[in-house]
Structures are given as structure tokens and as C-alpha cells.
Length: 234
Image (tube, rainbow, N blue to C red; front, side, top):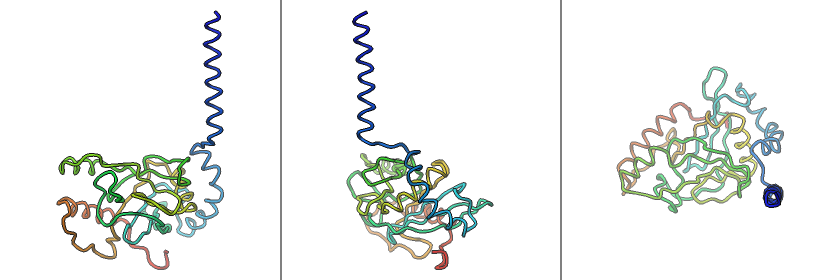
């Protein structure tokens, strides 16, 4: 009986300690972050969505990052299911050059068609959205090339500096985080492109893997759903 009491006391102590540590660390859930930043994000975004005749929050969402232009465009579907331009955010920090991410530590921002895997409410960079790199295409090409250790944890996050991710600034990270949470991760597509193929072509690259032109064809096709915004839209 005494041993049982000691065991129960140990369990209770462990639970109390775990709760205390969690509170001390100040970790938040996604819902708590949405509650914390939701009102101010609504003030910034709801009028923009209304001006475009897009429901807020939207039914579907697209985040399109152009590495060369250092711009992230936000698109959402209207009541008819047609994607409409919402707004753009400057990318404050991104490393690398044109070309996809090939391996851990190469400093490259991925290129391709992705989704948002999760939201991190306790990011070191304010708030963050994790991109689904490597996707199936990335893994297939790595196997074909004989590459391993592709890296991961590619984020769209706050702050102004980044290596391999997209740093958007804290205010933009709040907008994107809340918008993604309210839309639902399964309803978000992410397109990461070396440049805005709707406006210009990329000069031919030397010493690139043979599959990259096919990747860029896929990206161009994906972008065809999103006509380039006019100056009045920006």
C-alpha cells in the first residue's frame, strides 16, 4: 500500500512539474495565437477582402512566392470559386539563387508546388508556417540523381533574416498565420518560383539537373490560374 501511495505521489508530482514547465516556457497553441492576433489581423485584412468581393476568411487560399522579385502574393477564391488577387507582401529575407533546393545546408529556397504542413505558434521567428518540402517530386528527383539528406523545415516566418526560408516580417507573419488557420491547411496551395514567369523568362542556367526545365513547365502551368495583378490591384 505504501509503495502504491509513493507511486501515485510521484505521478502527481510529475504532472504538476510538467504543467509548471509548460507555463514557464509560455508555449501557446495555434488557437491561442489566433485569439491573440485575430482582431488586429481582421482589421488589416477584412477590408481588403471586402474590396475584392472575396469571402473572409476564404474558401481556398494560394500563397505564391517569387524568389527573384522577393514578393509573396496572396490569392483567394471568390463565391464562384475563381481565384482573385488579395495582396502582396515583400519578402524581407531569403537566401540562395535561382534553382531548387537540392540538399541540406545549400541555403536554397525550394521551388515547386507545395502545401502548408503545419503552423508553429511558438516559432523563434515570431510565427511560422511550414512548407511541405520535400514533396513527392523532390524525393523522386533526388532518388534519380542519387542525392540524400534533402533537408526540411522550410518555413514562411516572421523576422527579417533567413537561410532557406522566407522571412516576411512579424506583421505579415501574423496575417498569414491567422489567415491559414482560419482557411484550413488542406485548402492552401503554395507555389514557389524562381521568378515571376508571367512577366519574364529565366535566362538559361548552366550545369543544372536535366529535370529542372520540366519543373519550370509545371510551375508556369500552375501560375496560369493566377493572372498577373495590375498596378491597381497592388
